[in-house]
Length: 312
Image (cartoon, rainbow, N blue to C red):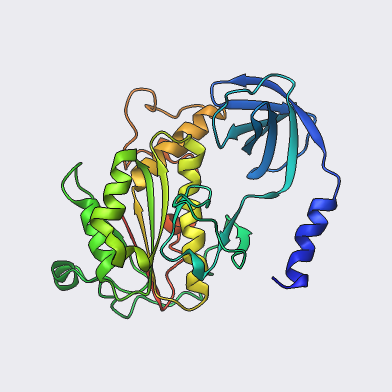
């Protein structure tokens, strides 16, 4: 890495950091006082087992509301909280191809990330609406039935809706193996842990994994980690898109992402909207979204002349 690339990180590390204290812990909610931070910024809580990463999800008159990115074991009132003084980041680079990452962008396959990867903010920005290319060219997905009956174009969004156990994940793996796009980014949000390995080894296979980046946040992960997985996968896809690659971003599933966002919103103190306490989160329920959707779902940021996106 060049000196000019390392200098900002070195300056941030040398800057004195303000500290605060944990005021209370209620459910998944950490109330922190004595520190200033913005929504989306990372903080670190000192515990007996080491620092616990958390994210600011709400700002109140007397402090911050944070949600942990790990287990709350060992957190006590009065614990020291340090601000990272920057938004959440993820490492990107061509070396991610063939890798399996967790919702925070850390490797799950037992191998460290190469030092040549670059650290970028998780929160990206969608292209300007007047500079987006129209959907004018087809992007074959490698499944004849889809390419014939419902062909996908570069920049198009596609939703696949079906019940459990009927083959949605199998379709995603077939797309990853057969698409003409050079890169596939797959986000598994809220999957059962035993199904992840089955998908990677059985459905995706070595050939599909070699040209893919898989981001995994299982159902037993905290809601904020499941939420972050969608943003991490989107940011990785955006990086490949900016290099001029054909990218297919697939998310399984957007419904479980919405349910995780609903958990975060309710834990942060957002009042449930009409009917939210009497019915389950559904695809049409606005209370599931709490006003925050990844740019990939809201504006399809990977829709350039050389990219596309598929979600389930």
